[in-house]
Image (cartoon, rainbow, N blue to C red):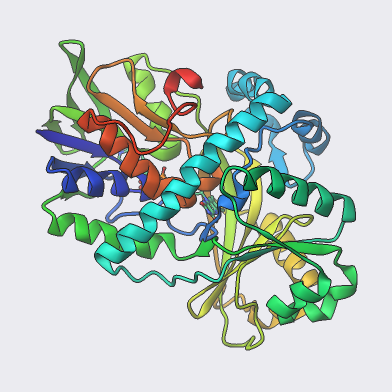
Length: 419
Ligand SMILES: Cc1cc2nc3c(=O)[nH]c(=O)nc-3n(C[C@H](O)[C@H](O)[C@H](O)COP(=O)(O)OP(=O)(O)OC[C@H]3O[C@@H](n4cnc5c(N)ncnc54)[C@H](O)[C@@H]3O)c2cc1C
């Protein structure tokens, strides 16, 4: 039986890998010349079950309104984007109740923890090298109230499998000596020992290579233009290089999933939210953090990736534009320097790489996995800020669904109808 996967980001490639391992004949269609060249290319690199809380949370609608038009806001909605996203926005607001937030957070945690196991299995099976570090992640706080709230959330999530340890300021500095310079500003932190870090692009290209060895055909440089219907399902995918037929189809086009599916009359609530990363050579800073540091208040992640450091942050609703805004990049760099003054040594405009990508965000903050209204068409998209964290598990779960087998985890909350 033949399955076509649309999209070779981390989610589509993981899906192709598990379909191939189940014995399906698999083809992947990707418009870029290789795998993981869009949102899965330059993301923050953190595999963090500790960050599973959706952005749709109590109090967020008011915050977003207050931030409207503010260039340095953590989540900036551009006025121009508003008319196109009102339906999505209403669903987002509906998900901001305490009960929905709790349910969505737990669903994400279930998938994130499963995905970590699956990623570790893939690692053991393939030996892919991707600048992996498994020494956990430190989240730091300057505001004691926020720290208290963070610990309360971690305690709540620990009931469903999250592991964490409270870290006082001395412990934060012990784990990340570079924090010594600004330790007086810290309230404390939380250490998440099972979180990992690695280069999503390197991993996904390595996985695509393993897929090819398993017999998967990749059609790179091929743009999906539409899907042909017939007999209650989909018969073929129309591409820039002609039509390709299959028995089943999986749409894993990230933020572009709704654009392709709406031509079939299927509405998928995913909206692109831009974020930026800045990647710099790290040699100039020998005392750099040995593990990723997430700053809760200033909302950035500082991550060691091999011989590089990567900073990520910013959420900007501005349509599909992927130009890194210089102002927002500079704001993030300034925030990092305010905590780690020596980071300035790494930021040389000649070598720093500025990148932006669009996170595929659903109103609930949970991905869409599984069947569509058409019998042989499946969706694996909408992973928001957690696609690297949940990508491998999503591929494994969707491959099971395509095969008609029960998924390894409870998938309540991930169906298109749940969104
Ligand atoms: C700044 C930033 C930081 C992030 N940090 C983290 C992090 O630290 N941890 C984490 O877990 N997640 C993080 N994320 C989120 C994560 O990167 C995404 O959720 C994930 O990459 C989504 O993967 P995907 O495969 O669904 O989408 P994509 O990677 O976008 O893949 C979709 C693919 O479909 C292809 N495509 C689209 N349309 C067509 C078409 N018409 N025809 C053919 N091909 C098409 C694209 O070229 C692309 O390759 C971050 C995101 C951003 C932007």
